[in-house]
Length: 480
Ligand code: CO
Figure 1 (tube, rainbow, N blue to C red):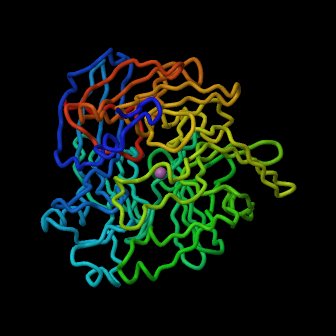
Figure 2: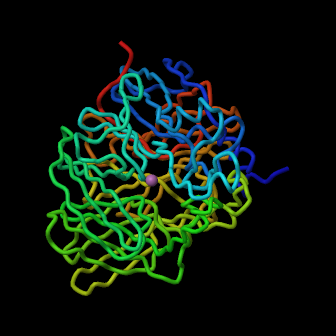
């Protein structure tokens, strides 16, 4: 007998969540435990790399899977589910050919082996990381290329979107926009090589570009996310090198050629949002950072909370990602970095030692000294493991509340949704998708944000693979 007390999960159950979902559905969700709150009104959008094989040949890494957008529209205690793949040029071509035609950033090779892949650096824009509704447009994002626009009512793909001329063909646009509570969407684009250009865009609520500014910093950069405060954008330039040769020769994906340099410090770039003041650069040991929870300004500088790994989580050579040995990898942990502008010093403190990822909070607190974070976390307090729980961290009292879906449930990014006329920062719901290995299907779970008790579980009649990011809009998209 397997000791689920100790491990909380089995490798088989976790790996089973990484099957492609090749069907596209639309239906009213009927199998519900509990009740959907009558005043929960709006639409949840999620992006999932859901095409994890072509004709039975697996991607090398789930980050190489084609993006599939899900929408869940809520109104009057009812919910409507829909999922559709983004019809990127690469997706359409590969589905027609029934084989991989492009190389993936994380090592997925096109058919034909080493020779077919050498010197082919064309990448497929897979639109698989995030989805936002902003300025009347639904946009699927992937950090190395342009956004794709979809119709929010039907999830049909319109095509590449250049944001009314802000982007040029071939431009990158990061997958981690931040929304300033003052009503601006802030995002960035990287051009990297021997040096790195960080370009920042700020859009108003209608989607019109308000301002953009760029800075060049030395060295190669692998930057997935950033944080904003009213006056600054903050980036962590992870201590990594890039050896392009195995990529150029077709033996590895570009993402596999990133080498973490544990002995080197992370550079923290603090870019003023006025676009003119000089960039402040700090150094700190941080490990590898994908995601930031939040940042805010203090009298002496600023604080930033981030999920840091002891090293870059690589897939072992010649191993399927489904065989990932969690014990061999460092867990992501929530750290607080305190930047002092006068001295240039950085202090850091571990806030949450439990393995966690996908931090989120009440969107009204972005860039402010907010009190609560919600994250996906391992079921156990120690060790590295898949995300099976949602935790709520109170930064004032340092208390943590846990809701666990173990042993059969595997969670994804939580979304915080404020209740109408909310009376406090945590007066809302936390919604997440939970893959249930016992029924090989996904639940949409609605939790009360105050205490993480279950409000409702919406049992979908099929599975969804583990997803990346998503967002909530108060706008309701439902069939008429
Ligand atoms: Co991300």
